[in-house]
Image 1 (cartoon, rainbow, N blue to C red):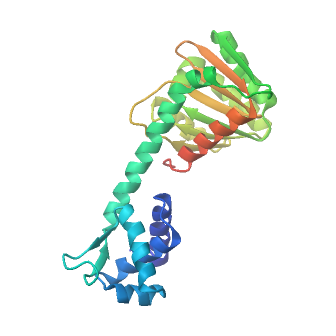
Image 2 (image 1 turned 90 degrees about the vertical axis):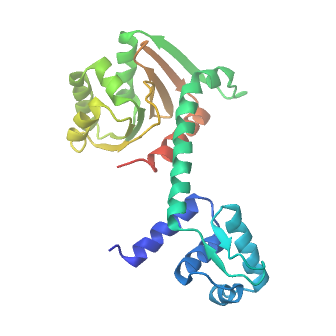
Length: 259
C-alpha cells in the first residue's frame, strides 16, 4: 500500500492542478478523512469560524467537489466527492491541454502571419526543400548552447532525414555537451530513440495526443524552428516573445506527459 504522506502529496498536487486554493484543499482532505460531518465539526478541525467554512465550501461547490445530505441546508451534513472524480476532472483537464497544444501548433503559421511586435525586430524565414531542411537541422548545433527542446513527431522526422543522419547529428551534439528534452508522439521511431536516449543526452517523454500530426518544432538559442517533413518545409523564427510562448507551451505539456 502506498505511503500515506505520498498519497496526501499526490492528492494535494492533483487539487492544485484543478485550481483549488489552500483552504479548499485542506477542507477536501479533512472531509475525505472524516466522512460526512457537520459544519461545526469542520470548523473545529479547520480552526476557523463557521461562516468562513461555508465560504470555502462554496469554492469547492464551484469545482463540483462538494455535496450535502438531503436535509435542510444549514443543519445537514457535508462531505466531498470521491477521489475518483478528482482523477476524472484531472484527466479531462489534461486532455483539454493536449488538444489546445495540438490546435495551437496547427494554427501557428496563421498566428505568425498576424503577429506584429512593434519596434522589436522579428526575423522569420520560410525555407523549402530537403537541402534547406538539413541545413537548418545542422544550424541548431552551431548555435545551441547547453539545451534544446523538441516537440512533435520524431517518427516523421526520422523517416525524412534517416536514422543514420540523426545518429551523426546526435554525436555532434553530445560532443558539444548539449542536452535535449524531447516530447514525442507515439510511433515507430520512439523505441529507437528510447534505446539510445541516455548515451545521446536525451530526456524523453511521450505525448499521447487525441490524433497524430506531422509538424514538429525545436527551441534553441532563443529561436524556434517549425518542421514539416511532408512538404518539406522549415519556418525559422527569431523573436524572444514567440520563443517564450513556444517554451511555455512545451513545458506545460512536457510536465504532464508520460515519462
